[in-house]
Image (cartoon, rainbow, N blue to C red; front, side, top):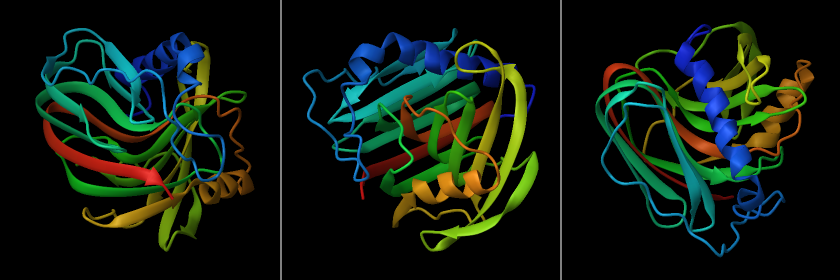
Length: 256
């Protein structure tokens, strides 16, 4: 979650959907069933894990399926430094980076979003010297929203915009924020709204945890912000942005 007028943030939003639109026919057939349990389906084609060493000089986007889960890795235009992303068994993935300049997002999830998802996860390792968040992430159309459930974050707080209130979900307290973004939305038009829940206390690594997304969806709706069509991938995202950033994240997700 970068600041309001970040060019890399705007570029990321357009690239994310430009690539997913290109994958639409295949991607919508992979990932999970459209039910509350979000069980992963078997898939006929498994994408190759990206090469382990990448030094980006131009914007790049990769995505596919692994063990029935959708995955993606995006890096901003002009980013430099090393990012090592790897898909593990089942819903596991890991990423580490060194001397990275720019913005990247990556993670595992499902090819189509849903208000009814209940996601289990274990964040076994987390360090991030830059900005950016870790949590459940996606988009909606009609209207355009970029949404987050932030479980933890790096050295820079993601909290800005209009504070809406605090509520409890899955045994922890979350603050809710929203802001209007003037950049391009995922379909290339002007403007979109960000809405996000952030844990009051960051999630510490090493514990099994749950995100009941319906609780967040319904709380946002009670404030007058109803997500639109969720026919876009949703992932447990790891993100960083900044100059000369370093970090290491290892996460496993499952259907709760």
